[in-house]
Image 1 (tube, rainbow, N blue to C red):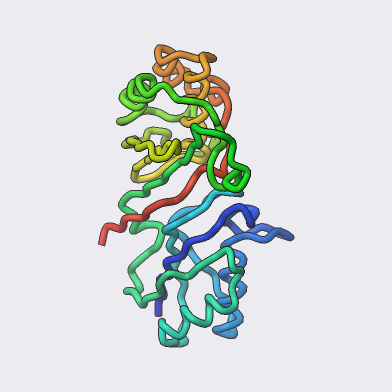
Image 2 (tube, rainbow, N blue to C red; image 1 turned 180 degrees about the horizontal axis):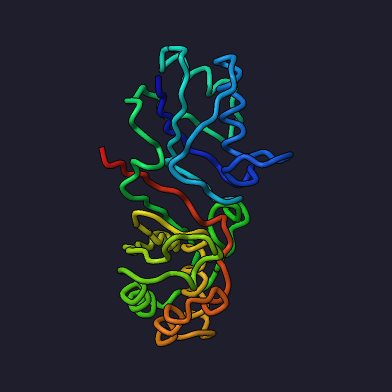
Length: 242
């Protein structure tokens, strides 16, 4: 039978999501606790793999076992055992055909930027840019970058079958925090952080809006500039196609 887990986590306490040797990761912690509960080796398959210091409000993973455990009791047991920087929000049984990765319709990420004074309490959760952002530049930037493009200049991934992505970007500003929302059926590695890095470079006058199409056309990672730091990035929502 197949179990589907919905979880959230504070990424600042892990060396990323995916299992690594001799490092604490979200996947490693979940598998360790599940294996203890089921008394067998459990491997999970996840909807997304976040990098070190990236957070998640809405991650999903599935695993298979022949043992049937009440999902409410399983959720309670897992939350009792697991690292307290991870929270299991829900567990349910799904059809064996359901796949936490391949059934994803689209993903939504949010990147948070502090436009106000430096806040040491939030330094692991919000990018401390601590400058005003020109909203005219921001609106123009979003209008150019949104839509379907080849994002090869915005990723270090050299093995992708295609670099074309169709993305939606919008934003809100509340209490001097900029919330940039990104939505797409899939993202390349570091793609969002490289887009944010370019926005910051443009706001700082290091690049201009007119450079964006040139960067797309160059299809080279060095063209887009710096990569924004990971702490402001959140996996916000996973949408499934059934």
